[in-house]
Amino acid sequence: MITNRLIDQAFSDLRSACGGVREDYFGLLHLEQEHKVPREKALNQIAFGGNDYGLDGFHFDEQRRNLYLFQFKLSDSHTQFKGSMQRLIENGLERIFVAPNKDDMKNQVLLQLRSCLLDSRAMIDQICFRFVFTGDPEEAERSKVLDKLREDLENKKYLVDQFFGERKMNYPCEEANLSAEEIAEIYRNMEGRGLSHVYCQACSEEMKPEQARKSSTGLIMCRPCCMCNDTDATQAEIDQALEKDLPGYLASFNHQ
Image (cartoon, rainbow, N blue to C red):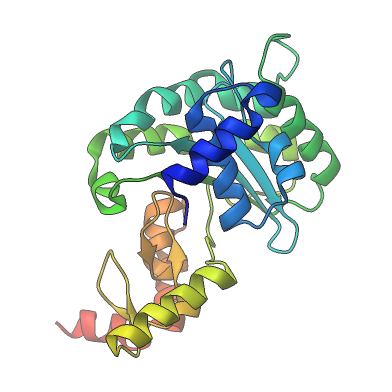
């Protein structure tokens, strides 16, 4: 768990070398705890200071072949994402994927990300945007403002396609799988409550933890709901996911 004490300690230990503000170290601890990134490596994957074009951090998971692009807010208010999402939409994605040399004063994390993209271009299958904060993910999921910004973000997919060429990326992320640690935590919570299944926070359907996905705002969802909310999947693809993951759901729905 990321506590204020851990953030304060990291800020105190590293600010003279890395600079930035206290909130930046929330992102550092997230990479360390949630993605098991060693500190020495994580320090090169976090934006310390400004001029970051809306990118607060990144991580490439070689096993899952996912490139995660993060925005971190040490706040319980999802409205804090509005300004940084706008920067990412208006200029950030272009700086990352198309025109990295236009600004010599850009944050060093963008140079590190560009190096990662060039080195791992053939291995990246999915671009996953993650918006991490300390508030209620369900409230963020219901926000019409953030929903419109996510739509604008998805409309910039052509910039990603320009970089990857003929290789089609899932964008922002079709399969936001939970980590082994997250699945284990769900099982511990289920055992403590005497439950045999976990429930999708979007549609309330039962599912096994291994079937769960994490939405861009942190909600635990079934795969069909995640596809509806976070991808441009077709209705046929969503129906296939329903038939596979929630057998009988479509039949009962159509019967009604």
